[in-house]
Image (cartoon, rainbow, N blue to C red; front, side, top):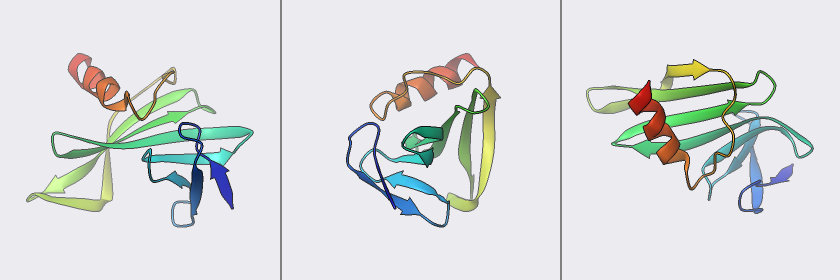
Length: 108
């Protein structure tokens, strides 16, 4: 199963563990099919914190999560919701996701 990345057009790999597609170059997860993507999740790191910004087209929802850190160790099984709001943000790309997250954190 393959899907071209929306941003770089390279082939995404299917991630059976998360049941979605993953573009390693863009650090983006896709749920859905080429014709209709249910949601897109951007993975990024800011100031040593791992974030996930998810744009959910079905629910028209934006969710920002971060990995919980204890004793300087990232707990890979523990995601914390930082914020969630409607509508789903538009025009997010791998190139501007860090700026978008900084803005959300600054004005929240």
